Amino acid sequence: QKEVEQDPGPLSVPEGAIVSLNCTYSNSAFQYFMWYRQYSRKGPELLMYTYSSGNKEDGRFTAQVDKSSKYISLFIRDSQPSDSATYLCAMSANYKNFVFGPGTRLSVLP
Amino acid sequence: GAVVSQHPSRVICKSGTSVKIECRSLDFQATTMFWYRQFPKQSLMLMATSNEGSKATYEQGVEKDKFLINHASLTLSTLTVTSAHPEDSSFYICSARERVLANYGYTFGSGTRLTVV
Image (tube, rainbow over all chains, first blue to last red):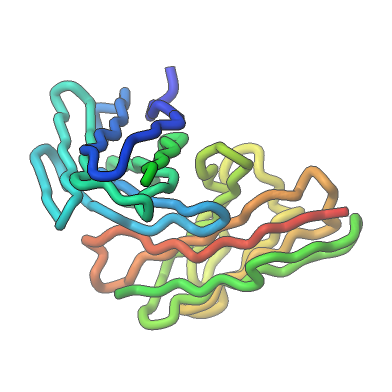
């Protein structure tokens, strides 16, 4: 079993839809969770950072962490074509060594 | 916010030559920088951790003599791919964390696409 699993997609949604992106993990020691967005041939950019369990909201983005289920989610409301990218989850136990998911390719169709 | 500049963004080189990639933290000091490699449609694979003023820590399976890392200052780390081969063709990305505001995420460079012909 991989340490971090993520559906690679591609996930296609119409503009304006609510998008749900998810990652599961096996290491119960993980407590730092991040979501990155990566456009084609570019470096990843940080979207959301969450420590431990709970929800965090930033504009159209909401990150959720459920440590009991070892499951994290990123929700995108009112999705836009400019949201089309690959979304990577990343997590760490000690904020030093991060493990990345393989990424989910999202396409938001106008 | 924190900005990491990576150069070049794209490089094509001949087999057997060496290529140097630079990673600079523009508005913050980074005691630690990370070098990743990413193949098409795959996630980032950590190659090594670059520590300012000391030797880099390489991940298992990464050849130290092939991927030379130098972190001579708090704002610059370099990765040199020596004696490059076509199988070294990949997308290389660096990341860094601000030394003081360590409770925030790592910032990534824009990546370098290396093609070895």
